Image (cartoon, rainbow, N blue to C red; front, side, top):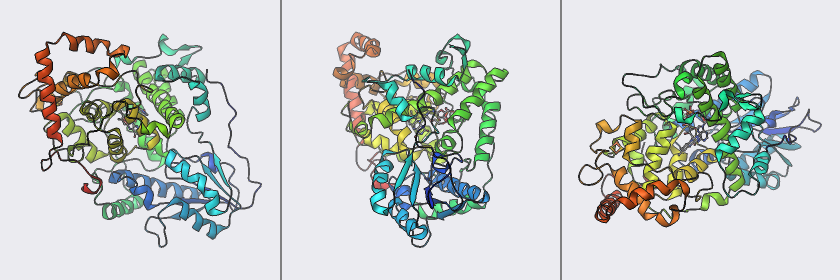
Length: 538
Ligand SMILES: Cc1cc2nc3c(=O)[nH]c(=O)nc-3n(C[C@H](O)[C@H](O)[C@H](O)COP(=O)(O)OP(=O)(O)OC[C@H]3O[C@@H](n4cnc5c(N)ncnc54)[C@H](O)[C@@H]3O)c2cc1C
Ligand code: SF4
């Protein structure tokens, strides 16, 4: 049971001398704990550092989004009369790293203390431990109370479990927050309406037009900077259209609730070649930057249901993603890191195929998902899980390489949310700590949920031989390769029974065709040669 815990790390008005409040690029929330109790004379520090733009070679749109949103946030604080010391990426003397920029800021302002909100990433949290010695100034690290479940509360819920299940955590969160509850009971008498949320998109149905966010002078300057300085990073900038201020993000939320939420549930798992974003919210970049809070987004969806503007399967399905999955993966991340990232339960060791960067593959579903990702720095959940993720799982791609790809290519990608989704959900590299079985599927699933297969050179109906969908070969081959590790999982019993009913010559054909296909992925000199860090393109 998640009990209420005292909020630690918040402060009243400052009883100190000058405080230097350091706000990170994904902490753009006016009531951030570090900004709590700001006194006249205190200085807010914000820095754009090269290290953060290049520790992986992020999609150009992701860099542009973070920098533009940071610059807008700084302008809003200044408009309130707050002193902001803002160091731009190209500023003279910018040393390119958090620690050394703090040292320079301490020399400029001579603060008595530094206050920060805990970061989203383990990597940055480790850096923070060095800051007191580096700067010679005490550093107060406050809780990030923008999440609905604190790290301590999650730890309490997890207890000494060896594996965690989202569904039970989610029910606790519903009870604890009262969101979508009628007294002690879940609204509509059920916790989960997922079974109703798996419809294929009917022919001719299209999503409503999305709002356009005008590029102002700040965003235009940032886009020019990114185009020239990060020309060799993955992705296009042309279609950049992300909210960069709280006002834009609230407009995006309002649009979603009114226009898309009513159909979100029904078509949550559908994929359509000409309408890739369908009824999804596209709110994750705003949530992860802090332009929106998880609570306000959940409350807005609940209110739409209570008003009768959205059906329960839509509101519940949407709220589950945020109150459930988003909080859950963050809890697992902080509980299990850093060891979590090191496991490789299925001993997957194949390098990432080149087509993950270029989109050059004849598999239409993968080509579409990757090209959409290049253009928009976005793909919706099922494209990530059941197309690019499913292929990586079935092909046995090394978890660290898949993780790096996902961290690079999406505008919403931050380690705390990307890593558990990829390491646990996609790669099953944690051996089932996060998911009760691998999300593995053959071509039949993709055919059922999308219109990709109709325009593919392969056929989802063919199981082997010329023209057989590679997902079909790889699915059964994956089960055979990993039998020892997977067959004891209760939810894998049925696929293994089906496999055992196949005659042995059919199984051998699958095995040899899958092997030939996988060897083809790594052939040097073909379009599918292996991606290396220095080999990315614009
Ligand atoms: C392999 C893989 C990698 C992912 N990497 C990221 C990532 O780096 N950053 C990220 O924010 N999400 C990630 N997700 C979760 C999810 O795919 C995205 O949050 C979602 O696609 C964002 O688009 P949306 O706002 O249109 O989402 P919607 O489909 O409209 O969902 C609403 C919101 O629910 C939240 N959400 C949904 N699913 C998850 C989930 N599994 N974990 C956490 N939050 C979730 C998001 O905040 C999202 O905005 C990943 C999922 C997978 C399978
Ligand atoms: S046939 Fe197979 S490879 Fe082609 S789009 Fe369908 S699932 Fe993808």
